[in-house]
Image (cartoon, helix red, strand yellow):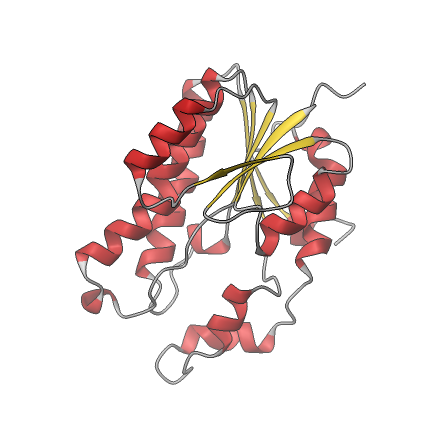
Length: 224
């Protein structure tokens, strides 16, 4: 019998998050943490860039859970690094990094020992105009790896789903490739249905936690 009964999914109201909700709710009670309602069993509605409100609302919800999937994030503005204001940069760091730390620490206090962070190739490679996303996803990746290093009794996995057919991908495909040449890749690569990625994570996540490898790229999985 699975030890996982109740799970947290951040950003379960749209994109990959809503697909993860659809997959995991088949067998688990799901708590959604996002800025809008989902069809999950429980919803904690909060804007991740309001860190004080996030902390207060989480403190008001002492919900024991067994797995936390850190999916929510923002791509933020796309622009050359010198044109990005420090305030826009700060917002990306709030949503993609600091808010996730707050949620991780809250989850630990609520008995959670298993964590999945939805990662990205942008955590390992820089793309034209992606200061906000690349730096914040890189910091998110490093943070989870540090938690795993410091808290060996917990289990952290980073899963990269590749290019998915989401609103984020549609936004990228509208960019001028003359200004941002790296975006050509997203126009040339067929985006995958996020439900496919979600089902693969749902099917294999228990096995992922049994292996030593900390980072998993779904594109390298035999079922992809």
